[in-house]
Length: 105
Image (cartoon, rainbow, N blue to C red; front, top):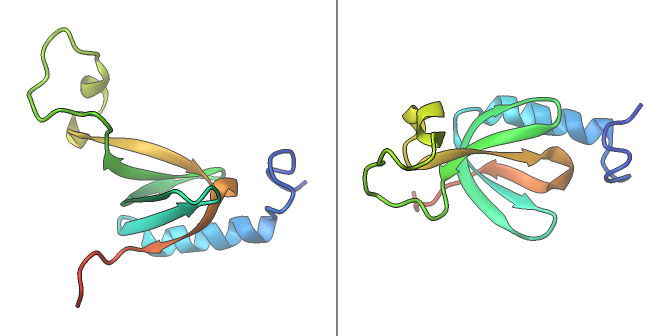
């Protein structure tokens, strides 16, 4: 049985294996991900599983002020991430990804 056959027929087991091997190679590194819709994201590759890769990226709309008691308990779940969040990207939606070099060497 091929994974994601109901979501995208073009995504195959071979593509999944390629993504997994690239994830193992770039784990805990700063990478750039381009999705099939053309959007691009940068973050640290935190982990991956059979279906998704997870990046640590800045949370949208996060203020730099300290948390107050009336805010959600989200900051208590992952206090080590601070103003960052853990975001999952399904493999079938990824066009390509690899290391990101924001500076000229």
